[in-house]
Length: 232
Ligand code: SF4
Image (cartoon, rainbow, N blue to C red):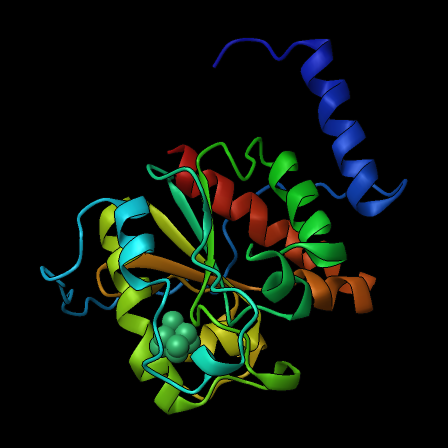
């Protein structure tokens, strides 16, 4: 690797200050100590779906396979780079996402954008953002198992088309839903899991970081690990 320019260093420091204030966190080893081996699972494929992301969106955006199709304002397919190395997955659209038809908007979305900028990525650059469910559950309740079983094939097909190096599940609910376990965020963090053949990391939801800024240090460790994987 060549020398790092002053401008790059200044940009890094500005981004870090935006995220964490005036404190600087230095992590010598970006890999969390609790890293576990990957368990491989069979990858389902859905040949009945279009093999292009925007055509796939058109194909499913009138879906009413579960009740959420009747209560949504907008279907929220996902946004980002169709060839992204990193796919970020939340549990389901919230109120703002339902109104705009886009995942991770509002304050939590802005924080996510800052975190992505700090690892030299953005919604348009090498990242795709979506949710397990494409429609908002009433009052932001957790997804029901029946809703997940109807909607998850859409997510799997999106991931099959994008072929990312890594999936990051934001928050406990997204993590436990994708991993089909009932574990705490603490027990899922710091491990490399497997989601139908693609490595998956679970970290904090940005809304949780807004409520508990003390967790930003651990979140930043996770995102440095994430960057080391997608940069490799
Ligand atoms: S949540 Fe998923 S399965 Fe349910 S209506 Fe929306 S797109 Fe269809």
